[in-house]
Image 1: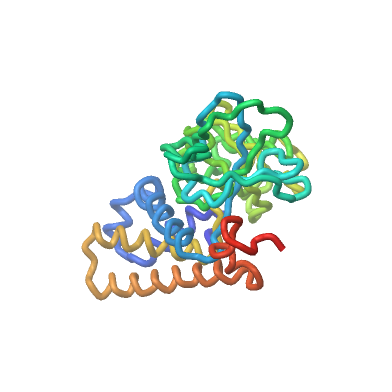
Image 2: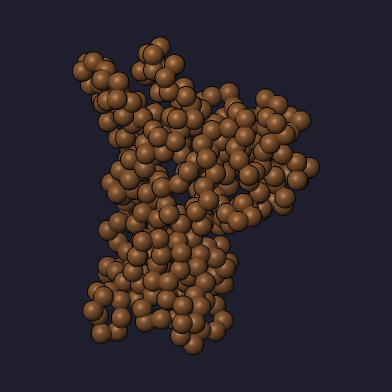
Length: 318
């Protein structure tokens, strides 16, 4: 990893190393690579992981239904919805006891009873419209990500950084500032389901990653990220600046796969030698297989049954 602990900086270093081209280093800035190479590279890799793994990384997002309101905005990174479920004591996607009480099954749009729900652009629409709602009206969407979000890294230069206002609330700056990478996404709930990584705190240079938490919701108007679970350590001095990064859930295997995917894209632009491209492609195939193996075997006893044994098939309930 890069000394900062940044996913983006690590990918950039590996891409430059894989291509090893002085002209390339001079022509493409780090910011250009993040905006035009790494972002599509993330979409490419995550789509393959989500669609091919038996045990893909699942994200959750809570929506609260309102009487007579048909459609609700969902995060842009929603790739494939696996279920829309309600739990006892459901508050957003935080579950008090984890017991599912209802599951909305999508039907054909011409179904006599209505199609229940359908994804239309960046919205999920319910038909028939919600009616006579009272009490618990929050439903949890469980989905795999398509990687569609704007990752960014924010350093502590120019007194810039994110602010940990509470253990469960983090405010992003207006821009990534000097030393930062990428862009801050201004789409509604763009960072819901993504990971916030605290890398360093003002006054404490050189520290490694402190904690990582999944973002429950994101308000682009206030730039506030509400976390699914609060930070448990290093919260002393809340409201001070933090160097941070927002990116999809990732591991060392993901860093390698994204780095190689980006190297192949840039290699095509640079018209690298065929032997060089073949070497990169071979390494990329190996990295993608490694991620697939990891995601398929994380829960060896039941994980592989996720795609084959759901509420829609017999024998789901014990």
